[in-house]
Every structure is written in C-alpha cells, then in structure tokens.
Length: 291
Ligand code: 13P
Image 1 (cartoon, rainbow, N blue to C red):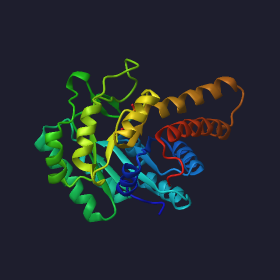
Image 2 (image 1 turned 90 degrees about the vertical axis):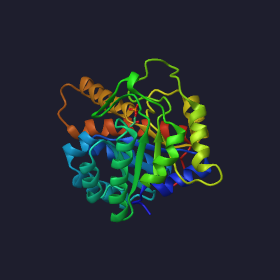
Image 3 (image 1 turned 45 degrees about the horizontal axis):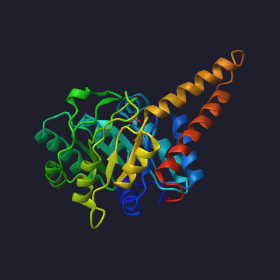
Image 4 (image 1 turned 135 degrees about the vertical axis):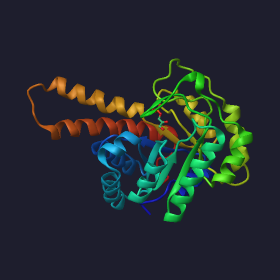
C-alpha cells in the first residue's frame, strides 16, 4: 500500500476534489522531512526528484531510500521523476524503481512529443506498476534543467490533448494553463481557468480517467490554489518554495550558531522548517487525512 504509482491516488483525488502535494526534493534530509510531514497529516504523497538531483545522487540510491521510508509509512507514497527531457534517463529511473515518470518533451513539436511520450509509456507499462506523466503546451520559467521563456510558452490545446492521451497511452496529463516555474513576477499571474475546465471535462466529466497536474505551485495565492483544485487539478507541484525553505533555514541556523559545528543540529532545524512548509501545502490542498 505504501509504495504506489501516481495514477490510483490521483483518480481518487479527482473524484473527491482534493489535490495531492507533489513536492520536489534535492537531498535525503528533504525527502525524510516531506515523508514525516505527510505521515503526521495522514496525507497521500508524491515525492518528486528532478533530473539534476536524480543524476547527482543516483536513481538507485534515491529509489532505495524511498523504498525504506515508504515501507514503514502508513500512507501511499509515489516516487516521481520530474520534467525529464531524456528518454534514456526516464527508462533508467523506471528500472531503478521510480513509480511515476514524467517525460517532458513539451518543447518538441507535437509529433515528436507524442513519439517520445509513447516510447516512455510503452517501456514503463511493460515493466509493471509504473505510471507516466506527459506535458502538453509548455510551462514557462525554470525548473531544474528545463528553461522556457515566457514568449515560448504555449498553452495546452484541448483539441490536441485527446489525441495526445489516446496515441501515447499516457496516464497523467500536465496541461499548460499559464502557471510558471519559479517566482511569479506578479501577485496575480494570468491563468486560463476556462481552459483547465474544458480539459477536465474532456477526460473526467462523468468518471475520473486522466488526472490533471498543476505545475508552478510556488507563489500562487491560496484562493487561486483552491480554485485550481476545485477545477480538477489533482496533483499540485511545488519546488521553488521548498528550495527556499531549505536554504533559508540553513543560513538562518548557521548565522545564529557561528561557533557550533554539529551538522545534526542543522539538519534537525532544517527538517522542522520543511515539515512546517509541507503542512501548509497539505492543508491548502485538502489532502490531509486522505491517505
Ligand atoms: P515551482 O518551482 O514554481 O513550485 O514549480 C514546481 C513544479 O512545477 C515542478 O514540476
């Protein structure tokens, strides 16, 4: 029950109108903190790892730690590879034991996006209990290695979404609707709520079939987050907020304890800060007690 792919937990979230927090981590301390917070809240959880930390730590190490933590946690936890533009790495992470893979070929032309997404889907599905997320349209901003200028960002075309899902066999769809990675330049970014509704109805009107992901969670106002969840965003990605929390807490502790040389104390302080941040998101997304 603890080690799961993303699809089943997200179908449940779609039906019950809450969203599962999908939190990007860059090290093992962060992974532990995220899991501890979700366990305290009784929330389902998606632990996300981007390409750079996946390569730096190694997919097998990440997957092994995830498995140890998840096996003793009384909540469903998925390990997700985030925004991977390399088909070979998608396959390596699937082999290593990640349970949800995001192939991000959204910068390619539609036909190439379809081809690469289908390739990863075919591979992951024949391996077993692994699901795949694909992106249609492009989310602007910077997430790990993937940089998309605002001018190049394109929103998801609902007419193409159906074909994309049907031909690729992708399990979960990230439709670009105007959210962006990183820090928003304005307090009220222009989001296309109507487009999200159209895409939601396309796949999930009578029965939840294709869960929808909201990227670029950092900096969205609480009322906007709630609206996106109500419109069917059942996986909510948060990365920059957690990187800031990790580094701010580290600086804070070190500045206040210049004469102390005890890494364990820094870790404890940082973990508490991350747990607080995750608690905020879990409450906002409405997934507490949904494990
Ligand atoms: P933020 O960094 O804006 O929170 O975006 C996270 C994300 O969408 C990861 O895929």
